[in-house]
Amino acid sequence: MISVLIDTSNRNLSVALAQDGKVLDSVEYDAWQKQSEFLVAELDKLCKKNHIDPKAIGEVVAAKGPGSYTGVRIAISVAKVMAFALSIPLYLVSSLEDMKDEGKPSICLMNARSKRSYIGVYEGENALVLDTIWDNEAVLKYISEHPRYSIMGDVSYLGLEGKKPNLFKNLLLGDKDKYRVSNVLEAKPVYLKDLC
Image (tube, rainbow, N blue to C red; front, top):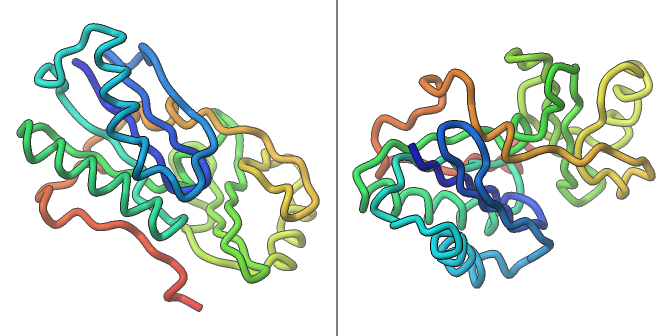
């Protein structure tokens, strides 16, 4: 089965084609505030390059947030249109869970601006800290208390070096059922800024 994988929740435009759980081809680059201009064109290029008829796509998997308001909406909108138009399953996964380090406890972070971070902490399939927003001081304290955890994401804003996540590997979900959207038209992004 051909899968489309999309994540535009942060600075990057990330889109891939996979077949039977293995990435065939992908594009990922910094497209800050330009993802909407490039996403559909990049997906079209990937399909043409790999000789895939869009009608052969069997599912779409997208990161649902948290992250950039606009970026999250872009991925969800394109994924919903594809799923609806092609009558295929739609799966939505947390943008932070999407970043976790395979097989290692992971502190997954994104800059939420205003001296805050989106944070989710994962170990295997378990969320140790559900996706939320913390001030950066609390994040740094948590990191110092958990030295064996992988720090995932671009955390240069914290003065740290994080590990680059393998987004596409994590979007190729093992147990997909818990991520499947039952009504494509009701799929919604996750915004966390409202918590503050």
